[in-house]
Image 1: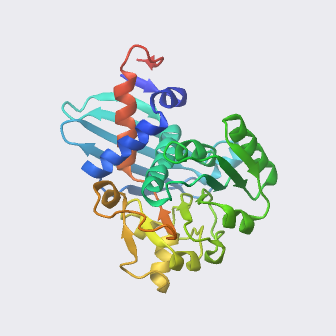
Image 2: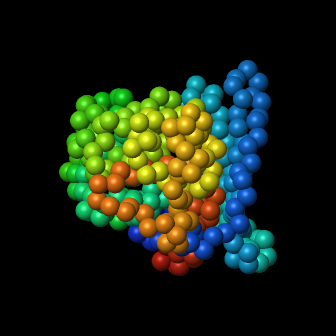
Length: 320
């Protein structure tokens, strides 16, 4: 049985191969029930949440991510989200590998957005704006750069110091990166606007978007979270990762409820794009918007690829 920590996952999952693995998973499909949500009482604190995210390919793999969200962990100096991924044989049910849940989730999340950008952004897109400064934000440029000629990266964050620090990291990775203070001006200059925040109020306004811009909304994962306003939704051709976004993502749920987004206003999901049922971007000046909430199928695709590659003796892994 393999035990893959964050470093082992990074070693096994190069950006291009992971993006291609997600494309294959969305094209070919797997069994992926709705995620389970369970409220867990924590004496004297806010309730915690237990999430179970299973998926399987009959005869090949069964996988499940177990996620615990403990809001009170901030007072303990611990991350609020703790997770692990388990991969089993689809033939025998035996446990094949465990994975660091945070790293697996981060890499597959930015890979899904890069996959969408492959279909929805202009092929010559070179200017990326990252809105947010956290763990996910730090990986967006490398992932998008695997499918598009990203050269210039602007970073905006509520904390100017964190934006500067992330820009410095990206410079060391080879990007012409800089922190920016004027979000409106940065949006107007970007080919791709990628948001990775937990904002409850829209940050990106439709009036700021230029013709041909691709908007990538990653951060919000509840109906109460918004990263783009209704004007942006009205201006854009709207795409989602899976049908779950219609029920979980405020950037889709709220516009559907208010009428800013028509019931048939979501044009396609990643399955439609990967299978060619929808062509993706249709013309140069089209404004496209992609909203993701994540899916267990993405976890399974990433875990299966990492497991297959990590069985090689050249990989440095801890085993038990």
